[in-house]
Length: 635
Image (cartoon, rainbow, N blue to C red; front, side, top):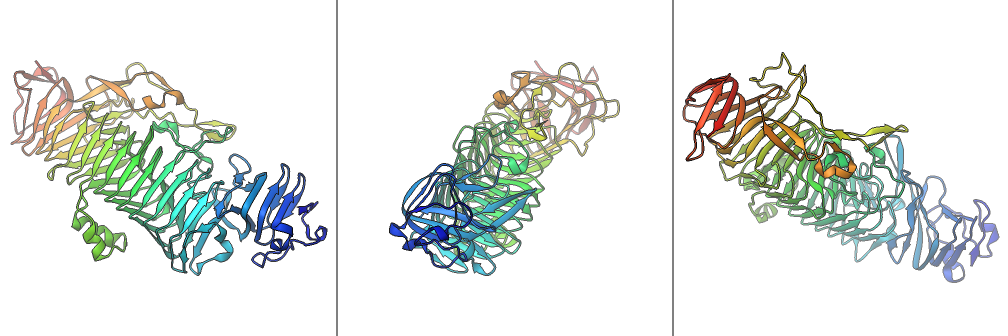
């Protein structure tokens, strides 16, 4: 039959009315002729109770809405569909014009409104759980398929599909809950991964421990994130397979770093993309991925963002960027990230460090047992025993760890870091690097650069009509930098790059290309302890392939060539301790050199090393320290 409502009431016009009653009561629409409803142009149907139909037709200009405080979700044959955001950058979604046939259900649920930085996001989800258990009034049960068994403490064999926009799979708020063998496929854009609006699984609340075991998640769409942990929750994902693929941004979307509106990776980070597989938010929130496969086409695999003191962990998991660009993990807000026994294959970075610590090591019995206790992972003795002891292997088509904020990285065990370009790329930040090769760890950079320190080439956003737009331009500085008269080129400062390599064999170069200013500088403090190095360690001048970098040239960010030059504001302090040996392969400019009693420095076989200190030819000796303008040359 055809409904012709002219305002918010429709019952009086129907012989068999769709009564406006309290949401959750029995549907009167099921009794209409054939269960078919048509909404014409200019007509409005206010649905106040869940309604089942065999067909629904909504003409262009027609509207289907819910009473204030409620949301509508359309499912056809158990699949959420037909819903789209009403505006780019908006948060409301509406059912779009079309004809929907089959097992059609229009579900009315209580609104799950989440506010973030001034915007309210009206979540709709297939399953909503809080401290009282499953909340039916906020759950779209028509979107749950398969032989699901759902209780107040767990759900098994959930199957959730969506082809609309901003529909969530599971939302857990301040509850302990187990998801066992869920299958979730969301195809269509999300809206914000800073709240999880449109994600497969979202958990929030200090009292939440969510265990996801055996999940299969396959999402495709803009910020159609798989797992979002927020609000102090503890999320544990194990034995799962997760993948997210890019979607198409709205044609009028403007790339921004304004967090409530951000829907793509800022190109100023050197990569692009519209979806990251996971995000970790809020204060003291934890997310752990154990014996799982997690991948994203672009942007990022495991991310922290918009929070503080978060803990992100990967144990015996395989992480991958399958497309052109993206990172393995993002580190921000004093986050602590642990990667044990993890295999990582990424396109641009193993990690981007904006402020926090990251550790790559082995999944030894002791290390995993310790994390199981400190992170409350809840792994049983049998589960702990079944986890193989693995090393971490990182393969990056570009860089290893990149810093655009202060932070640290520690590498130990049998970890292998393979990169096409610089293994460590520091964009002018206070950085700590510790690599312990005593158990076989290795660092291998195909382009021969172990550590590159440069000026920050992130051009940042610009303000356009009150909005932070990603339209900045990086222009490489020219001319000689002004030398600071107060900066000590021989001392360690809190703003320096401090790197220690112990018991490892390295082949590659170390460059400090910071320009500094008349008031400051940044040194490279390099300690080699029981380490064999073959390469150059020097202050340098660096240049990009192009002098002006816009969004069209984003892949040039971080990619530089070096010319060894005497330090201006970029001192290089080298300490050879233990039984370290440094085979100098090219001209190196230092400001301080300490050669331990058991250490040595030499040229490659068949060549001769010469040294000058402040222009005076000097014979280098073990047990001595030299300061000044030190130049090592190979003849």
